Length: 253
Image 1 (cartoon, helix red, strand yellow):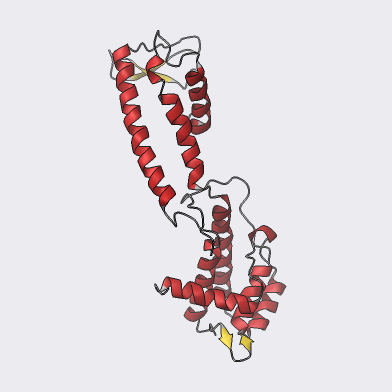
Image 2 (tube, one colour):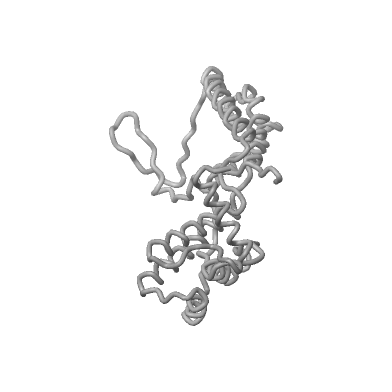
């Protein structure tokens, strides 16, 4: 089996929530194939499990490899190497390091700060205990000494080195964060537990081949949105997949 790349444990995704587009008639067909007639609460629980699968499948699809974080960090390392050049009243000088740092700040801090009108922006008045609003025409300047810049540079250097250690550790891990197929594997276990909890048939195989439960799960997978379906080839393959995932869950090799 090919080694999987370590992935981040979280992902950001925009867009509408994935929709489980399975009609009542299609559910009836699937339950007829399964040979079970669940109660309305049991049916609702199955739909909820499937809807949650689509949410987590999208997280899995959008999870970036740890290597992407390494790429960002390398850019920060390159910019901070010239931090001592920040002087003469300019926080960011007009040199390569300054331009690179501007790009990094745009990339990494986008969305952390919000556009505000002059009346919404406040500054702290050292002579008073409250905050005062200032007009849009006002400006505020901060003067930093070379010593203060050096202190900022040292603190940033320490932070970058600690970040490098963590990123290198994640890069060396065989498994980290989300793995391909993880959301589907968890969905299989949750559906198996759903069947057990409702005292439905939950065995995956029978003498003549895959069970009706395996056929049922395979049928649901085929009705997931195309980009969120697992590539499992058949009910028989799905049955073996559940067995393998269960063994992994139990700690078996």
